Length: 143
Image: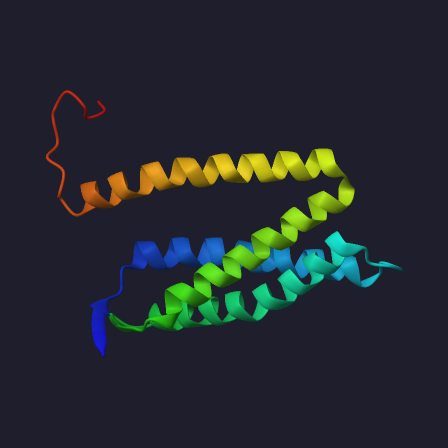
């Protein structure tokens, strides 16, 4: 069992992001309930949201409970649950765009790919900076 300190800033950010994804998933699913027939994209969206809602709800509940104390237990499945729930919610939103047409679907897909590419470049640099692994040059620091 690995124990770590709870960082309130991370907890608040996580609750906002996971709560927003959970809200979008629930809202989108309520809109699909009244659909007379579901094509392939809307059926994919329905299954994606059905998977995302319990996963994200678990993560939000666990995060809220962690915030009650100073210490938490690190378990291997927390990141997996958060990633899978977030991915399922994103796939559901993407499938709804595909339902609207190939143009909106391709626009969502291409912008999501660009964001993923940018994030894979930005995140490692940010983590290294936060851990102090990168020496800061005064010329590169913002004023």
